[in-house]
Image 1: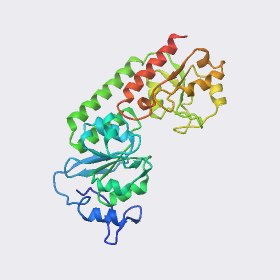
Image 2: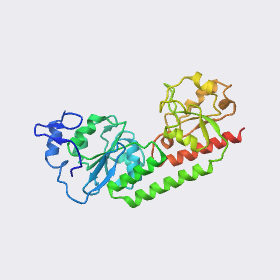
Image 3: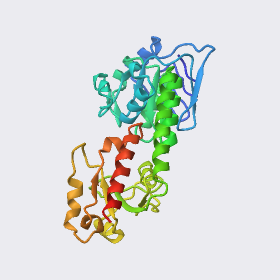
Image 4: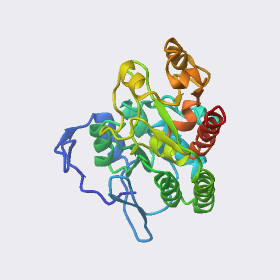
Length: 316
């Protein structure tokens, strides 16, 4: 299968394309020339536009998919194509079946020879997470690369639908996308008229980091009737210090922590009893896998976050 691509594989083993030539190992070249990667295109293609505004076309539904980030893995399974996943990267831990799939390294550095040997006919890349040169190498070998990275609720639903289209699992993918959209819309409607709660969301501890209103987590805070005290900052993920949080004096502090049961980021703030969030006991934990990955589990994380803000309102 050959995607619509501006890259070509030259006879000297170098890839030429929009980003310039790149050398590939003899092992990768041999796999490409053996027909595992490159084939002939024919009529009957299905096409989808990825999150880099590139149209990717397949001559038939993908049968062997490489998902190169934990979020991409979740989205492919959500699209009903989990049985077609042949390669993942480290920390692809949901759904549980993904743990049994061959890992090809981390999202920041893949083992390309292992990946190519698995002969995927569709690679799902993460826009800002994967090394561009490695994905360009794969594309130069004839592998279709579909980039995703949702930044909105609609982006999550759309990613599921587009992946389902490419994998030929439209019925399952469209149903999951509809479930997610409807659930998020219901939450938005339920909290549309609630009293606002000022919120500091802590996305990391060292350095201290938060999100602005454009970030997907910031959008969830707003959806739940929260007011992000750092929402107006220009950076998507701003760096802060304790003094900034003390000056903002949020009514609630929400943190994800570094694990599903790790709340130590919240205990840090207990040293400041004058903080409104501390004085009101509004220090809340939301499992990071439910709120910090742009996947359908965001619906569950959003429900939890909305419930925490309801608790804060009740404690006034």
